[in-house]
Length: 307
Image 1 (tube, one colour):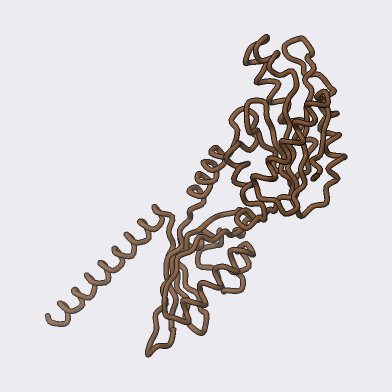
Image 2 (spheres, rainbow, N blue to C red):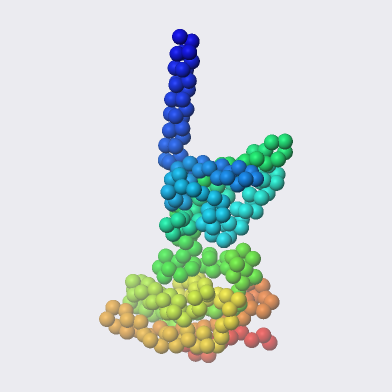
């Protein structure tokens, strides 16, 4: 009887453990979370199904750190390795959002939490969770783009332009500014007031398209006011500003077809090359050049020349 009772108790514990494991797996799947561990220093990996699914690898297949680390994007791999090494050295922990390319070639974001266990001050295991946060990242990126985009033209808006202009050396955004080009439309007010805002909007949308076609791919093209546009040139690229400015002016030689009628809208362009100015001075220089272009009869360009 004692033996039967012991067997029954053991069976109940096994059943409870299986049920607990089942609940963990279901909860992890619902939250798109997987649990992982890695022995130290052997680097032997153990994953639950959720991690296999995140990497789009067959469940239960053989895994090793070299193979899985190669699925991280280079920057994510570099940051993760640095955080991991520090956590192992200090028996600490870390949290990190990493970008990966799955076994099927899909880009995903995952949130990694990690804790290091040790014995007598020596690291023996690092473990934690990995959660698929791709939708969260995509939503955040869409929200950011909406906040930084002019809703009519699809160009960068004044806020994004100003943030890039203020970051002249590219410390925050990684793109130093080499030059600023300001563009004002000529004769736009007559179209907007005479034909109505719908035709005015069509003219602004067309202006954005023409400026994109003229500007280098690396440039930031922005709408910064009603009919005012700006282009920030990447300082890492060699751009002939005279050629570019002439191309912008010529792009508006072709009239806009508004309704069934063609209307000519010219462009006045002011250019300032960044040397050692601050952001405000660079903008003033470009604005001075723009004023000079307008004074010269509009439909032309001028580059700021220091006295």
